[in-house]
Amino acid sequence: MTAIRTIKRVPHPWQHVKGRSAGSILGDLVWLAGVADTDAPDIEVQTTDLFAKLDRLLADAGADRTRILSASIHLADLKDKPVFDRAWDRWVGADPAHWPQRTCVGAELIGRYLVEIMLVAVKR
Image (cartoon, rainbow, N blue to C red; front, side, top):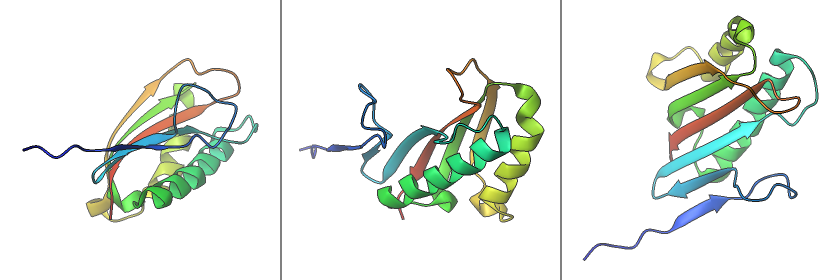
């Protein structure tokens, strides 16, 4: 007999956002997505803010950045990729054993958002 698995939804940090969660957890797998909480029109500021937010969401889900399997990065302007990459390299750290698979694409993001990230991780 197959065990029924319960999907846990990670509440969206913005109460007014309807129809989506900040992520999902199924067994030991964690899916998270987010944008920066700051209005700063600067890719480095938004990226740093978003990494802090993702660190909190990962911790709340029982994971951390060393447990990320894959990341999908969406940048509003691909010219910002070198700045984003430097911040990413600092965030993921120097140990190649912790580097996730990653894609990075240019995307038309809504409003003030310069970067959006979706992660898949494994719980500790």
